[in-house]
Image 1 (spheres, rainbow, N blue to C red):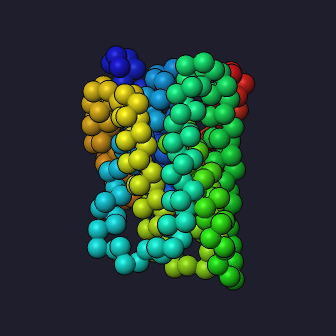
Image 2 (cartoon, rainbow, N blue to C red):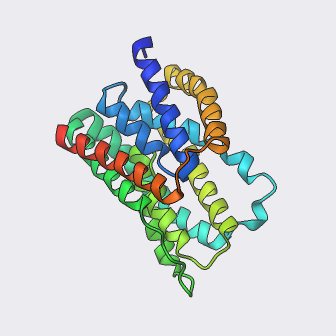
Image 3 (cartoon, rainbow, N blue to C red):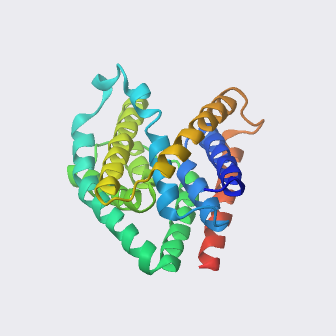
Length: 247
């Protein structure tokens, strides 16, 4: 990646990190959306960077908290996630080589859907969902995780509808995404799609992620959570529509 591409890429990572810190969502979608829109890097390259960045906070958040996990919910989610993830990675490889415009169109629709999800606040159900619903949510998350390293919306919505403590929900999601990104990188490595440039770019992004995570934590914008969600929603919808239109 040339310097004239690297600097905008790092700025995009900074923006995505800040928005995710103050909203809890959207890092991958913002990075992929801007990178593809301005042709800074390929979808495959950018999604690998996102996977590496997602590995940074998972082990720290889980350390000493494994007893709080809801193991059955996590297990059934992962049962659906694994095969769909492999399918998503294979689909990414095929579309990247043969149908780049179709891939961009799917990415745009995914980002629009993620933008709409930001406005949703799922109410917890009185009774726990069946195991099959966790597997189905895991399958949907795995497919999009394999394609774009954006697995959040299906699993987040599924878990937040459950009558579970918020700590348990958060840790289950962190674990699922951590496992997903490890598996995704392994599959890409087996396919020979990982490169030194990807690793080097990921290392350059880590200080940016750390700095803007702290910035978002200690200096959030003077806006209510509702208005911040609206801004993030507007940003993602605009990115998604532009991607669909240009494709």
